[in-house]
Length: 387
Image 1 (cartoon, helix red, strand yellow):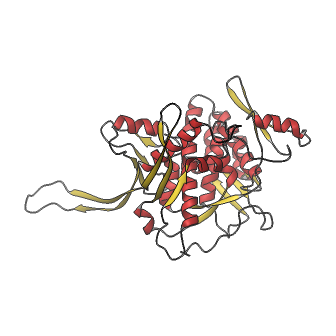
Image 2: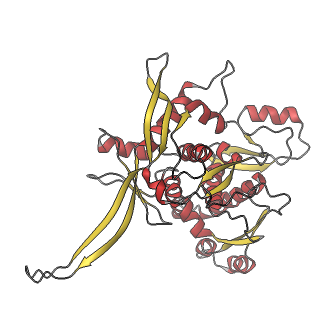
Image 3: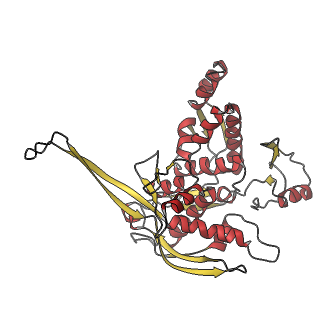
């Protein structure tokens, strides 16, 4: 069971309950007794606000693409006779999964098993790599990644006798194995050749060049054998693939509470994806307000497919409720101060007919109000060009 971030009071906490098969979120009163909040936290039914701590992650385009690819199976294509592929809607990179000695069926199963916690593991790997990356070096050195440290950073609850549950450790190991099997395909461009005057072929030829790199290179593994005889790697020595040499060391601060959020409730899953995309857009000199197009944000975060399926089932209003609840959660966590619909778009939504209201909502914009410098939980960074 995932645990919520620790806090000393119930102020601003949210409870999510499942009623008639639907998850409902409710704001708890600020004067709720602490013992009640603590009991609900232990039961895993309350999500409390975090303390604003941040972790620094790498944010080059390839890292963003891997993050989007590992959040879930949406966006992946599963051909019958080729590697599964993920095409990033935001840039030109492609992610493939190709495990050594694995069948195509096993690779497709790995894609279907992707979940937001795999993306959390990837973000923590980038944070560890950044921490070890010395100034003046062209790439980070190899680092040791311990599954237990990952679970601690992701907010998993330890067993009352110490340590983490074996199924959680195994899940973290599987996430590392999946990332280890990922390849990034970087297209270099294409060229169309004219008709060959010798062969007199009428059809022109188009040749495309591309580079293919492992996303993560594994150097060593330390295996663990549990009481049931199951073996799985506990500690991994890894480093980013050679692709990282072609990108500047760009970094951004991510709220630790985003990584600690559980991945069971819809609002939490959406908060991880939408909040990460905002993190990738972070700038130290960002204006106090910015406008974000809803559909573009959903597509980039990999959520649009789920929203579209909800609309096809005539649950478009519920998708909007989840989206607004997610924005409330992100505001409470401290990613921004407040949010509201662009006034002109809000007027258009109010005037839209029932048949067009959902489409009008998708093409509307959200205005995000940033925190002031004094209360901004995202501190300034060193120059991104420093090495």
